[in-house]
Length: 381
Image 1: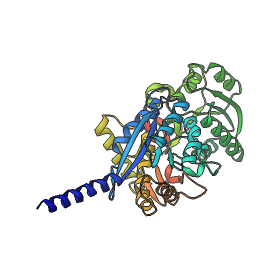
Image 2: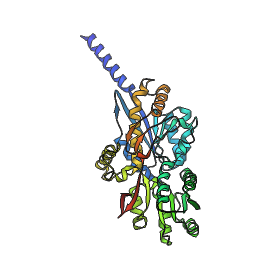
Image 3: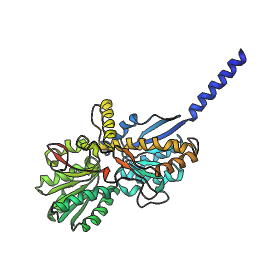
């Protein structure tokens, strides 16, 4: 009898040990405080909605706040790798923050799912960037929709105001290249820092160039300031924004001054207007409903970027498990390889098709042309 109890205890201990070993650790770095908080808060909140179990594996999420500071992002990522032995990392929230951690995840062989705007985190592809996957639409995909609308609306001259960081710089490059192909001349090119409280100088230079339209490239609430400044000084042309402005606070802070703005972003902003046949509609509606139930407000699309990262990992984990156990280099390399082979995976932002050359993987199903109408988002008809 005693022998059977001992055996039973040993078997139970082995079972518990097996459960402990069957745990995948995922770090999450977000900017829930600081200048990028309007982006980081919905991302941090979304962690509670991510998959908790995949097959026999439980997923443990370790969330850290970098305070919008790129240096703190590096500290957080290194801590997740060295102290928590994570198998993957979601984040950080800001483009400069994500650019600053690529070296460290690559050296450690830990896949990074970056919910940031700039395509620079994955392009041009390098040995280090092969460890990075991007859950937002690349700039050229969004820019193509905006420039096509401009050309159709008869825009011949364009003013550009972007942030003085990788997000704004890459957008300036993409816009200049795409505008030339559409016969549009960029007549003003200005920069500002995300934390700036005034952009009067930049606005006056743009107005002096008398452009037919103005495109503002800034992530989160900083996208509001250049537009309201130009409106207050009498600019009457058409405003365009990037997917970085796709959050409720853009509407709240901008008010009547952002009415009529045109941007391209994911279907989440106008999910009820999108055709039921869209492969992402049901997933986006489910995420929005779960977020609203948990927090009482609708999520910004930036939260959807983190949710999609969780869905990508959920699909990749069983494949990686055939290569090694969680916590090992073999498992992490297997995750990276599985993510890179993602095909036709619908999520909140669109449909992902990753390749060795494309670690974002969106096509036109990942964007909608949207306007601000009567203080809310509406599809451009």
